[in-house]
Length: 72
Image (cartoon, rainbow, N blue to C red):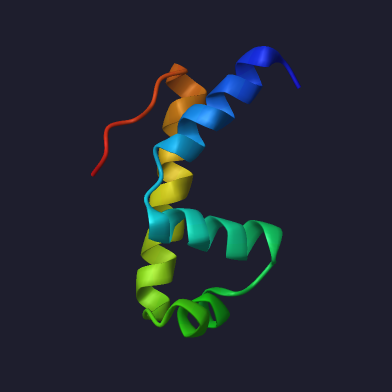
């Protein structure tokens, strides 16, 4: 992984809020489903899916532009 890729990941991670970071870890690292994440965090499955959609959009924007996307 290049230095730029590492820096991009750090920028992305730093841009996340608490719930976004937890959802990302639980989904991608722990491989929990949105339903399971909702139960763990006591939020709705719909909210989990919304957070995952937002994370994907922001990550895609970062990869395209190399700049941190604006917060919603």
